[in-house]
Image (cartoon, rainbow over all chains, first blue to last red; front, side, top):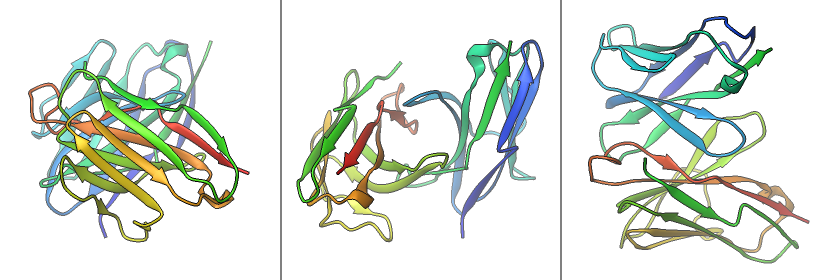
Length: 111
Length: 118
């Protein structure tokens, strides 16, 4: 059965800390790995990773995919209270556009 | 970025009534729309996939007669929860993806609808 597993499930840090969120997957017909940030309502898109070893970066956030070991990480440097959210990773299937989501990592950044 | 609007954001209804939720892509053509359900502290569970102009494909365990999905245009999909019961109370989120560069293979999400059935 296909699955996406995130760790840790929750994390509490202080402002300025650097965090690494993990996502592993076992998915047949895998195409890409996506990261989303969910605050109170709608998940907002962060990154889509299709190629192995190529880092994607947006401000203090960066992510990379390892297709050999079947995992991805999301790094957040110099965390701020506004980074507090649930971070979801999802595997995109090769056909049909479906996503399978992990459980999410709940990040709490304390002042 | 691509914007998806979902309405209403919150609805309370009596048991036995039907509720319709709308999902619109505002700045791109959504060839495919997805409907998810999310329980508290849990991840998103895909309910169904709908392609414009064709019948929705439901995930295993989702009752298609209970959750009616219509995707009549490239910018609008609706989910109707028929004869709602308290166990249908949940957070329903739609997403949309398209074929243009902005939305290809990326699902953009609506803000979700919290359904409470009394």
